[in-house]
Amino acid sequence: MSAIIIRADNQGNKILSELAKKLGADVLTLNDQQFDDIALGTLMENQKTGQTVTREEIFRKLKKS
View 1 (tube, rainbow, N blue to C red):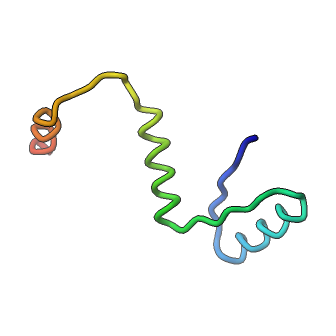
View 2 (view 1 turned 60 degrees about the vertical axis):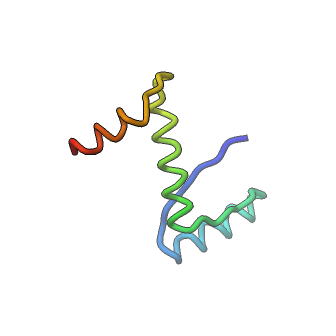
């Protein structure tokens, strides 16, 4: 199974949701925070290096910013 995410205004979401339901698809509604969480998780997954760093290294980099 696969999925797509479409961001639209409320009217567009309603129309697309109704169409998807008529086509037999399951529809899941996300709020903005949930959408941002998914986007961040996807970005993090795509940037994985397999390397680990210490807490100190992270804070050192954050202080430089």
